[in-house]
Image 1 (tube, rainbow, N blue to C red):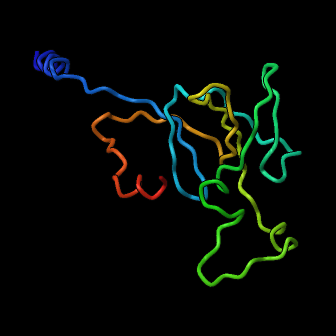
Image 2 (cartoon, rainbow, N blue to C red):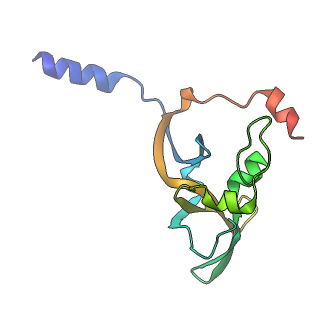
Length: 141
């Protein structure tokens, strides 16, 4: 009988909205986008060695961009005081397995984001999210 009382109490609590996100990594940092904006995840094409290119998906040409370079500004992470490596040294660096995350853009069309590893799906309570602080928003205006 107490088991039924517990069940009723659990159901009586108001449900907080859960949001679904597609999560991905770029150079050991986690990022997420609303799941509704994700269209498809594809393995990286072997001919895309530079991280940029064009893929054809359902008769639509979709540009693919190297997301890490857009976010971090350089092709490989650099530590303070580290000198630029030659192309021979860069080719010896083991790169992580990458995927192409195809997303719908707000103004129409789609883009492929080159991300590290395979994206996943996470559920998050709406109360766990905070808006971006104004200080960070002012940096990119």
